[in-house]
Amino acid sequence: MGIDLIAALSLRDPDLITGAYIVAAILFIVGLRHLAHPSTARSGNAIAAVGMAIAVIATLLDRDIIDYPLIALGIAIGTAVGVPAARSVRMTAIPQMVALFNGVGGGAAALIAWAEFRRLAPAGERIVIDTEIAILFSTVVGAVSFWGSIVAFAKLQELISGRPIIVRGQQVMNGLLLVAALAGTIWLAIGNDDETVFVAVLLASSLLGLALVLPIGGADMPVVISMLNAFTGLAAAAAGFALDNTALIVAGTLVGASGTILTQLMSRAMNRSLGNVLFAGFGAVPAGGTAAVGDHGGTVRSTSAADVAIQLAYASRVVVVPGYGMAVAQAQHAVRELARALEQRGVDVKYAIHPVAGRMPGHMNVLLAEADVPYTQLKEMDDINSEFAQTDVALVIGANDVTNPAARNTPDSPIYGMPILDVNKSASVIVLKRSMSPGFAGIENELYYDPKTAMLFGDAKESITSVLAEVKAL
Image (cartoon, rainbow, N blue to C red):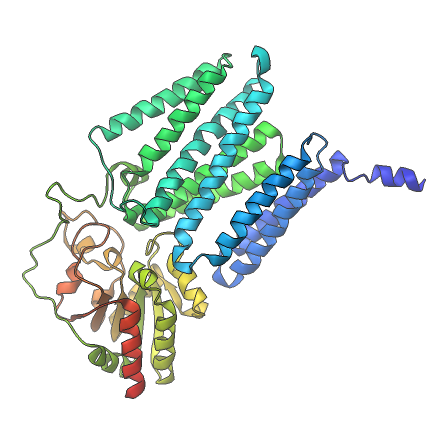
């Protein structure tokens, strides 16, 4: 009886594996729910990781697996590359790592689809139509996600220019690549299981992924990363249908749905459609080779660290507005130290977070969390904008386009209509910036010419450190 019980509870029992997948799916959902708030994000990540571990173990127990040594080799290589990379990456480089890891997921889905196609269509045998559709979808979307993410990584890592790279006939070429990929998938789906055509579809989709992201500028990277994340999730879900793997279907669907919602939120935060993001070449340098500038008829007023320290130290309310300049300078810890010094003097300090500040959704939140900034001090744009009118000093650290009043005041501006942080409503504005060079939108910031704005030029970390020293000396 004991032997029979052990046999009934065999780890390879299909019901047990299905149950493990259900548990994993529940943990994925709970983990995703916890990611909705910074205070629970860490535990949410751990919960989802446990769910993934259960899903992986359950999959390895599947009776259909025939090559465990090859799987072990893959795990070893992935661990040897992934763990050191994740442990050594700087917080400022998280956006490009997210783009790269996301791309790897899409590429894996495409390769799995290719392998499944080769397994199911030997010697001209017909693949069941629903399975073939899942395979083809995973191939096209996964390849686009992989190569698009590689371009996003290269732009963020500054391996190639962050500006839109546009060639003549770009959109026509993209259209032809899309038509070629769709034509190939239709040809395969109607019963022509030719691997040569399949590889052609894979190549066309790969080129489309490259061509789709190259014309997109760095200012739009938050939206692009969210969109490609959704693509990877959808490709993984389709691969799950092809493999009849419940955990992969659930995980991919969750990633695809959340990425799609986030893409919509990011687009809305810039008051632009996804089509405009993908095809407008936003931030491209004009033909003359210089960024667009305006005739403001005003002057830029520079200041010193000592003057900034006096304004901050004797203020009642200070709002810090972080941007990519803070990330580049790795100034988040210096900013936190300055905030502590001000709080010891009785100053109320908050942080204004624009949805698309930085290079990825939540970029500023991640950096400030690393510097141990309390979550309660991080205020989203909609919550903080009403407080700027009662703010004594707004300290802008490299946030360019998301503070530009041209979004409200200049109808012919490319960012007109984009919701911005209302820093110009503060009694005083101090901007930390290396130079007067424009942001990714390629236009000057009208805020810099406001009479109540003062510019502290230099590296953000060095500037904050100097201001902190002056504050402590008061």
